[in-house]
Picture 1: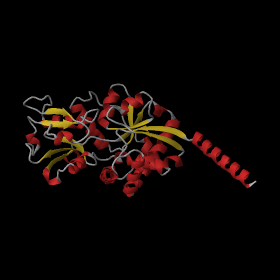
Picture 2: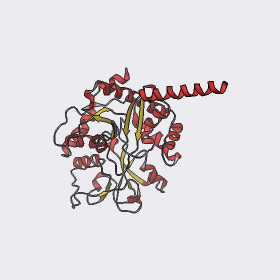
Picture 3: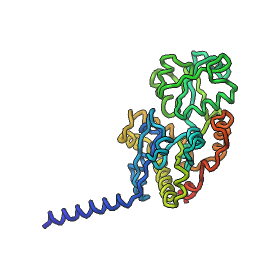
Picture 4: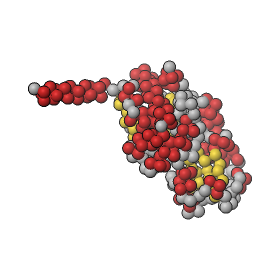
Length: 324
C-alpha cells in the first residue's frame, strides 16, 4: 500500500510540474555571443529560478561568429535579443523594427590596445597604420571614432587600414595589426594571458574617451509590443533578468560556475569576466540613459551609418513597470 501511495504522490507531483510548465509563458532569448560571463545575469536568473518565479519558461540561445541576433529575431527564432545599439539601429532602418526595452549595460567595455613598443602612442599616430576591428555590427563605434578624428578608413595614406579582426588577440600576437579591438572583460585578459603586461600596452578606452556607444541592450520587435500580454511578459522577463544580474554581481564565483554549466570555457576566466562586467552594469536597474542614447544616435548619423534619426527605437515602459 505504501508503494502505491508513493507512486500516486510521485505521479501527482509530476502532473503538477507538467501543468506548471504548460502554464508558464515561453520566452526565447538570443545572445550576441557564446555562453560566457558577459551574459551571466541571464544564466543566473534561469538557474536560480528567478524566471520561473515570474511564471516564465526561458530558453537561452548562445550566439557565435555566424549568428546575427537581428536576423534571428526577424526570422521568428527569438522573442528578445541581446544586441549592440549600433547594429540594432542599422537593422531598424533596414526594416527590422527593433526596440530597446532595457539597457543592462550602462557603460561600454570596448577598448583598443596597442603594444607600447609599437608605432602608436596616441590617436595622432593612427594615420597610415593598421587597426583591427570586429564586424557583424561591432564596427560602428570604431568608425564613429575615426570619423570624429577625421581619419579615412579606406587604407589610404591619409587614414587607416582596417583589418577585419578575428574574435581573439591573434592579430596582435602575429603582428597583423598595430592595434586591435578588445573588451575589458574578455580579450584584454586574453592579451595578458598571452604574455603582455598591462604596462606594455597603450589602451584606448571608448568610455573614457567619450566615444562609447551602447552595448548589450535587450531588444524586441516593436510590432509585438502592441500586444498587452507580450508587454506584460517582457516586464516579468526584465525584472527577473535584472534580479539575475544583481545576484551575479554579488556572487561572481557562483555565477561563473553557472556559466560553466551552460557551456562556458575556463572557470578562472569566467570569474574574472564577471568581476569586469560588474563595472559596466551600473545600478542594476536596466534603465536606458537617454543622454547616452542620444550620443549613440548622433555618432551613427555623423558617420552616415544610419541616415535619419530613428523614431520609437526605445521605450522606458518595460523598465518603469519592472521597477515598481
